[in-house]
Figure (tube, rainbow, N blue to C red):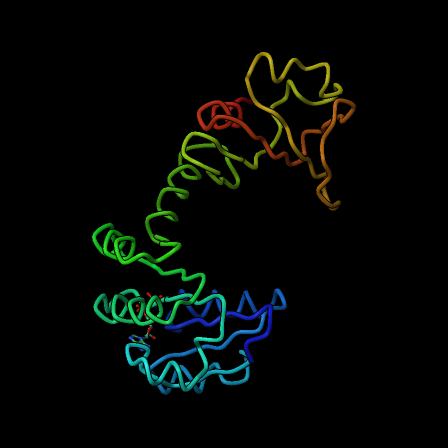
Length: 218
Ligand code: ADP
């Protein structure tokens, strides 16, 4: 099954399941692996292949031809030793790209020390994101890198009814409106001639504080 666009997801708990189903919906083949028979049964028809196995055992992974895949996600969180052992086996198999979920910083440091290519912190990252949503007017928020963000918001009144090029936005506020969406329409890239209405949604891009501050203007 190791086709070009295919991924192994190990651990089909809440996070792994959601990831695997989203990959399938996006057209990527998924081999799902979990120790829990009930989970394997439940997902049987929803992933390309689902198998019950203990991922800490190298022979089990080799039998499933996991070593032929380019990308593996280790979505085991709560059982930290199982997560670490699984990553160690995968690194020994020279899987080119390994993603692993960490439940906390300590777990993450160990995975990074092992050499896992991408360590993700879903709970920590979601907590940080929600903090920004709770704080203010942002409808969605992505910090591209520390200090630089994309914020979805309603346009402040002073941006409405005038072409964006005439609002002095970049000079005065240090942010750019990258895209906009009229009610019921699709998202479009914004340019100097774009005229916003109060019901529109906009995507503001810029340094985090400025982008967030701008989203809060009314
Ligand atoms: P979540 O918080 O996303 O639900 P969990 O860490 O609770 O994540 O779940 C991880 C999943 O990984 C569970 O379904 C569990 O059965 C599975 N799992 C744990 N250890 C192993 C292992 N050694 N081999 C395969 N699957 C495992």
